[in-house]
Length: 299
Image 1 (tube, rainbow, N blue to C red):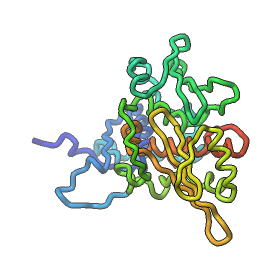
Image 2: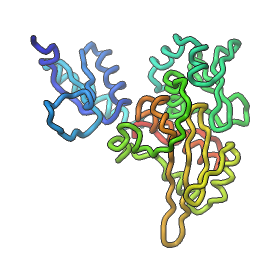
Image 3: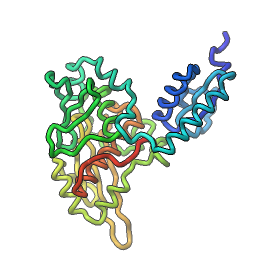
Image 4: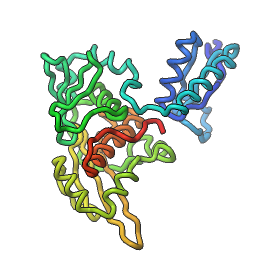
């Protein structure tokens, strides 16, 4: 039997899933059939071949040049204006999927509440409370003094959490990002966790780390020089461990997750965005401002 994709050719290597979703949507709008194939799905007849990137886009051979041109123009436009910083850039399918979900099921899985008058999910994030309204496609703080929710990373993490969280207890086993399935290869290069701005803020000011931790309800842990356990979302705790810097050695900051994290956020891209949102939240509190996320996704 002939493989129906045998006449398809690869026209672009993808950096991550965000880019894949964006480019596939653009090709669909131009009526170009396309296949998104992650490298995890690609067979190599038993041979191990190191791949660069997350996957590839394939189109019919006779449409390859047109597809390449569409991708080239779109990527040039994205690079000129930045990528994935505004909540309006969230995939509309996430909102549509959440609108179709049974609120009772979402609440049970994610340990959140549903306000029928507002048609919105009420959830805690680092001690503050927010409403997520699928109908209005907006996330907003419950109280005016809470940090605003106006970043792509925050929206992305919350939507995926509401859609993907499972009704499972914590394992109580802390792991680093590279111990998450697939994390050893993923969390490197431009996908290295965006911890440096937070490390720079707290590295020589451990008392500020303590203050911010207390303000968000974190619990002290016996790790490193200072460590706190943050209940970020109802089913996702995180531990931040700080080793203070001095004249000889620079500060170090590490994060740990309960090993169930990948059951509640299925994609490593989403875990990356989630950490970015948390770091920006804590950094803005530490600097005395709001928690608007200043870490662009997909960078």
